[in-house]
Image (cartoon, rainbow, N blue to C red; front, side, top):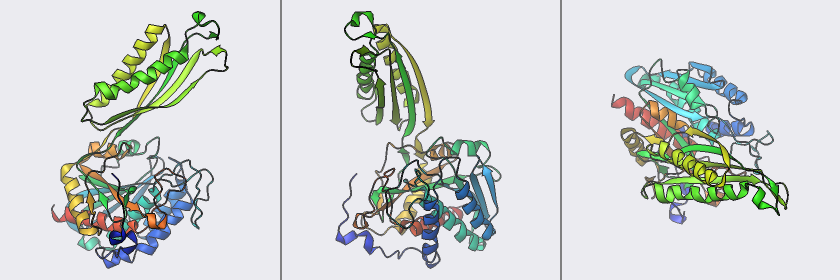
Amino acid sequence: MTFTINSSNSPNSLTLDNIRPQIKALQPELVAWRRRIHQRPELGFQEELTADFIAQKLQAWSIPHQTGIAKTGIVAIIKGAKPGKVMAIRADIDALPIQEANEVPYRSQHDGKMHACGHDGHTAIALGTAYYLAQHQEELHGTVKIIFQPAEEGPGGAKPMIEEGVLENPDVEQIIGLHVWNNLPLGTVGVRSGALMAASERFTLKIIGRGGHGAMPDQTIDSIIVASQIVNALQTIVARNINPLDAAVVTIGEFHAGTGFNVIADSAFLSGTVRYFEPNLESIIPQRIESIIAGICESHGASYDLDYQKLYPATINDPRIAELVRSVAMEVVETPMGVVPECRTMGGEDMSFFLQKVPGCYFFLGSANPEKGLAYPHHHPRFDFDETVLAMGVEIFVRCIEASGNNK
């Protein structure tokens, strides 16, 4: 879905009128926290500086918290003075192995590492939410857990955090999380029930043939011929085995083979990714992949070694919690585009593991501002976003917590 931002709904004209004064007043701090984290990016399960910064803030605000969950994860617990549900807020804290190309005062100080996906913003929003709730515990219904999760970009921190009991003591009843999203303009929120993000799976494949002289192909089993037929045949899975109304992707991203112009390659290496929304495709696609590979290899007399890994399941929102987020977002967003329901992406997210355990909702917070040059895509070395979303994120989180508590 493409959006054009015109003068009547320019992001530069946002007034944040629907954000309460206490959260508006936090905006400079939110920006400062985000920029500090941005300058010191760390990869998955290595977020020691980031975790220390988060813990220092929580300690300064007298918020009880536990560190060292799944190595570098943190959970803070804020108990309200009034009875109510246990809700969790999840924010990821890791960065990517990308060299930043932005020339900004807060650019990454760690070579080859960058917050190129907005997790620095997620962390700042979660910290702002924790601070606000801690200042208003007398009015708070129930208990809120703020989960600062490592390694979303890989190999995945949600699952080990769950295994170490982050959703227990007290038991979380519902969970929400957000992603600043440069595929949507500032002043919009993308939220829908059901699948929002795709399952993410990967595979590596080695085709084993028999090498030989390029002029004597009859003495060989050409691994490149075999692998090429496999690449083409794998595309028939989505085209001919999947319901046309169910989106899926099978992509080959790597193909390596051969050592010389007159040498028939002994082996070929392929790797690829699989994406889908519907859980019933979890077994269908890998079965078809291996069936195709096995059949083509057998027809040529080749063999193969396939390693198929299921990384993250689809991120599927609970309809009731999604409606809660949608109704809150309608109160906060200010542009005519408002809430965007059709915002699915084939990107993957390990928030999905939390949503498999607890009803919840993951949503997108529009953060692109082309007029300020802040519209590069996620994972781009020049990725950056309009920091106005930080206060908006806190406001939406707080309103969701309040609405949930008042409906205990």
